[in-house]
Amino acid sequence: MALRFSQAMQLYYCGGQRLGAAAAEVRRGGIKFKLAEKTAHSSLALFREGTAVTYGLVGLEPTQVALNAERFREWAVVLADTAVSSGRHYWEVTVGRSQQFRIGVADADMSRDSCIGMDERSWVFSYAQRKWHTMWANEKAPVEGVGQPDKVGLLLDCEAQKLSLVDVSQVSLICTLQTAFRGPVVPAFALWDGELLTHSGLEVPTGL
Image (cartoon, one colour):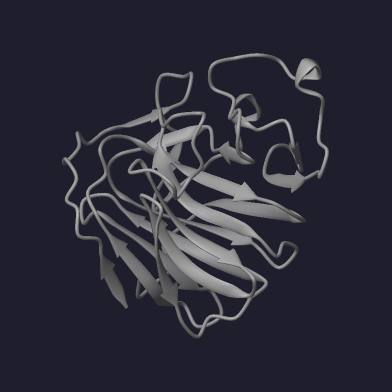
């Protein structure tokens, strides 16, 4: 299923970069990333060497978190440390340990006062109250027949301007967002309970 939002967005320059570094580490067929602690909201804690994130209702006191302009201040969001703007990239997320989360991609320099899915600079698949939705610019559209699998895949096709949610058990596309990315984008995550585990450096599965 493909959903096209009504508003068009500016096309982007193709390239690739790591946040705070010279270039992205991209293997054949996939992006390799960790979560960037410097972007993580104070309610989030990273573990498994920066490949997983857990939510704490209280979280850390803001005074105990290093201040920097890249940290999300209002919402429980964390970005990956690697940005891409060309090629096809695939990664998976273990989502079965959370009941409320968003996963997708965002412009690397999106506002740290916003939440992914609420502005025009992020594109996500949202799960809450046992239902999936697509989200962009705070517009939501339902995604039917998914349930809550233990793990899902995300396929990013920069040239085609598509982000797809993937059924990893059937190796098939569940839903595809079609839009125009403004610039380099990074994997993006938000959650309000439990934990998410990321699996990157994967080749695009055959048939996708």
